[in-house]
Amino acid sequence: MALATNRILLVHPLGYRPEAAGRDISRLASIMPPLGLASIAAWLEKQGLVADIVDCYAHPDSDQRILDVLRSERPAWIGFSCTTSSFLDGVRLAKLAKSELPQIRAVFGGPHVSALKEKVLTDYPEVDVAVVGEGEETMAELLASGGENLASISGLVVREGDGVLFTGYREQGIELDALPFPAYEKLAGYPHVYQLPIFNYPKAPNTSCISSRGCPYACSYCDRSVFRRTFRYNSADYLYEHLRTLRERFGVRHVNFYDDQFTFNRKRVEDFCRLMVDKPLGLTFNCAVRAEHVDLELLRQMQGAGCWMASLGIETGDPELLAKHRQNPDLDMLGDRIRLIKQAGIRVKGLLMMGLPGETEASIRKSMDYVFSLPIDDFNLSKFTPFPGSPIYETIHEQGHFEEDWEKMDCMHFQFVPAGMTRERLEELFTLYYKTHFQRPQVLLSYLTMLWKSPDSWRRFALNLGSFLRFARSSRRLGDS
Image 1 (cartoon, helix red, strand yellow):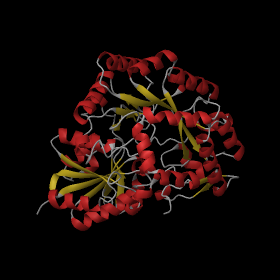
Image 2: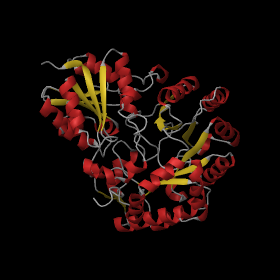
Image 3: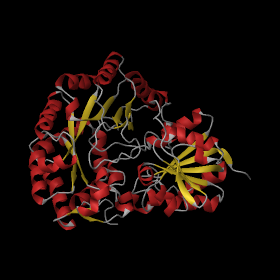
Image 4: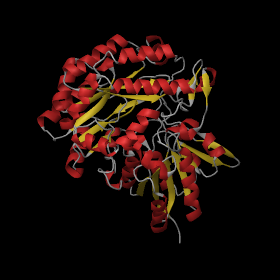
């Protein structure tokens, strides 16, 4: 029986053994929908093509789900969106798909693939095609081509003769307001199987959505391989209709905007807030901001429109280390804006890294002193990881010891150890950083108020108490595995 040339199965790989999923602290804390795949699926359907989605992260034991779709629908294509840590699992699943349907072609996309380009096809014969950059238009052209004359389609890495060819970047990014809303309905169990980090929302069900692509800044640690130096955003009207659809169709009560920079365009945010006040949806939201683009007036408008929490990238509280890696490294301004966010009645989440090149024990102590001097309600401390596509990746071996084990490059392992440090000491200080934060009286009181501000978070915390305590003691992602 022939394969359906107009059909693709889109897969979000898990990235590790399914039996370890129950101990994975990151899954217990948060499961985010694969918004990129859902957007591609919606765009393909709009072009008259057909797409199914299997999210292995939400449903860890999904090998059989994939085989079932392959047998019933017989798609000519299977597509994988991969981070660095999930790429090899995607390769495994491509082998599985080809064992069931030998004629199926595997196409890979995502930040890891966009950064490495030709290397992906050169080193992994299971990968037939790679998509570089945004996927909607490139994938639509790929499926419409029937697999022929791929070298004429921009945004692809393909095999050409005995070699591998990158066909070049697309001339411009897609107009974001032209996109249909992501095909959330194709995500099994949506929205209930997805959940934001505990204590990061007031009500369930909740979800994430994206209202912009790219970032106008160029920090050393950020991967720019997908959107490069572009920065685009949806209009306020589109954004409001997106949230209205999530509320009315799926019953969502809280949304996290998974944007690098939500408040860059002030007028857009003001117009969106005005819509949320004039035509209330009964829905609250979180967003990420940079200190340069908020003030008390704007923050009060956001709070009135339903902003519940704002996240800021602090990265480190050591000014000298921050200046090496980030634009506008003004810790005094950052501290002032954090206090303004609290003054406006919005919760504050700090986003930090440990183990940046140049990190020392003294810089970690400075960072702790700085962070603990601020009225931060919650924080996320990640283990610095030098990803392909980030500026720092090019010289990382000169600045310490880097063990490039892709499966562990998930920001929860110290794969890079700065010169002068040891992995063991980094782990000890990482655990100390978290423990000190959670033992502060004002932080404990803030979490206590979540009993009535976010009762669902406390329910989840109680159900997974053992796993959270194991993580607090060891800082290991997969518990005892």
